[in-house]
Image 1 (cartoon, rainbow, N blue to C red):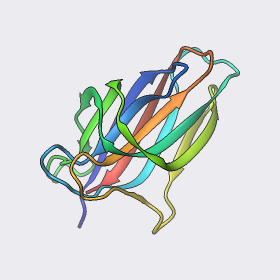
Image 2: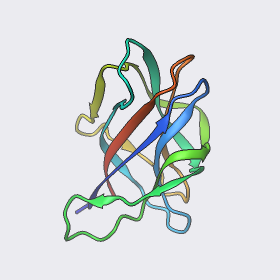
Image 3: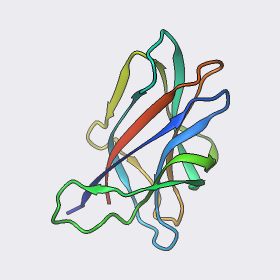
Amino acid sequence: MSAGYSASGDQTLTTTATTALTVGSNATTGQRNKFREFWMGNVGTPADLASIQVVRRCTALGTGTLVTATEIDPADRAAQAAAAENHTVEPTYTSAKELLEIPLNHRGTYRWVAAPGMEIITPATVANGIGFTSLHASAVTDWRVGALWTE
C-alpha cells in the first residue's frame, strides 16, 4: 500500500512565471509520486484580477526553501519526495509539458481532485517532479499551493 503525504508552499506573483511549490524525487532516490489533489489561491489583498496557474513537469527542482512533507498516516515513513517553496532559482521545466493551466480570479480558490486513474504521476527519476507556477502582468501579491500525493 502506498503512503500519502501533504506539502504546501507560497510565492509572490511577478511579471514572469514564478514557482510556489515543487515536489519530486530527491537527489539520491528516484521514486514515482502520484498526485491525487492540489489547491491554490491568492493570500494577499483580494482584488478583481486573474492570473494563470500552471502545473508543469520538471527535470530539475530548482532552488527554494525546503518544505517537510507531512505524513497523512503518522504510522508511515517520512516522505522520500523533496518539496520546496518560494523559489529563488526556477526549476528546469520540460518544454510543452504543461499538465494543467488554470485561469484563477484572485478572489477565488481552486481545488483539483483526480478522477480515478487520472492522477498526475512523475517518473522514478532523480530530481524529476512537478512545479506549480503563476504570473501576472501587474499584480504583486502572494499566492499559495498545497498538494496531496502518494509514493
